[in-house]
Length: 390
Length: 151
Image (cartoon, rainbow over all chains, first blue to last red; front, side, top):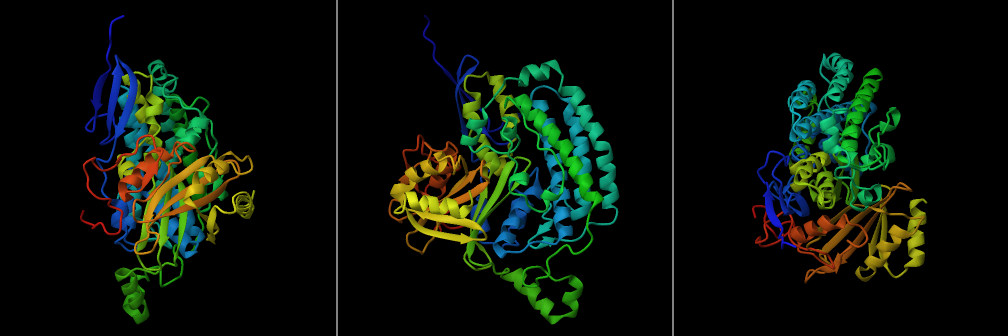
């Protein structure tokens, strides 16, 4: 027998298919992966440390920059945690708008994932189609908050401002045409022989193992575990909407693709329901110690001016204690664990990062597979390095 | 099984292990003795009525200047009963160390490495305890309160 040695191949941190600055040290026996060791931290910015020196309100833009493909979701998870600490619930209109924007954000995130994942495997057309629809969603976000990727639109206690005129019409136009676009993507990939050969049976993980590794989101559901935070621990009024939580059977790359595609369709449905029953009313709680008074009132009332000053400079005080609040973000369970010492700044600002935890199962999934499969599997996890590294 | 049921079941089985029990905003937090951590975690996972198979999160906390200085916080979840539970252990400033729960939940692998990287807390029995976000030659543990913001 010839004596063979394994070869060490470095993948990344600069690589077109690692979806960011991810480095993986591959130990190969020919083309088969014997061991894969991810090396992360290239995008570590010390977000958790930075947050300790900011008021709760000032932390909101930090959260935009976690999973930058799903800004609205990050904002939501964070403000829900602070609201839980304060023990407040926002008015129904604010809740509905939060759901609407979070589901549009889910579609946008999945579209970006679809385009880049397909592109990694050689299918270049879906990228152009997917980004075209995603752009429409980003235009909707721009109407609402002025920004496409870093919304910072949700506030502790509600929203920054109400939906602008023309938003509901534009949103309805989008959801009218979107399902046909998903059909388009499906004609390119779902029954495509090359796609199926490259994704079916690749990178499978059992439901039990997925739970052991703490996986969440589409990757967990593709492994036949019916777990969605929107159903398990409903927030922001999700219990009022009808939607299916899709699950897969085999937990392979193909099933993850199917699950995300179906989730896009379901999100479209949720947006339709929200628009049909959008309640009128306030978009912020009426607590001047927590929520900025309107600009008009600040000019007229000295108390409003004082409240504004206090909130802006030292931050609103939050009761002493700790909470954990999480949402079903497009990547999985995104949670915030906040410890308050009674002051206006968080004592501990911990992000429960779905991309980080999902990525930790990568070595298990690629073991014994081909190098080409590594690309498919990384793409199927759907990671954003900013969330992995923070 | 309701939250109070879980807590009383645990108190019955491991009365010495629990050093504090609090509830805030309908979340239950149990402080455990470090030496009982591993066994309690295994029990929480394997008991069919508890079924905490999912380790949602594991992180460190620096309570400086309070004593004991460090905490390691575990967030558990049961997919079966839809219950959540928070566990804590308290560690002294000098050589903070505790058993790794990797043998209970594989999710602890990278989470414990991050707590080590950011706080310098050692997890005994961890298969590969080394820094994960920072470079291997980094000095200091940034999330400690005496580490400057500039680093």
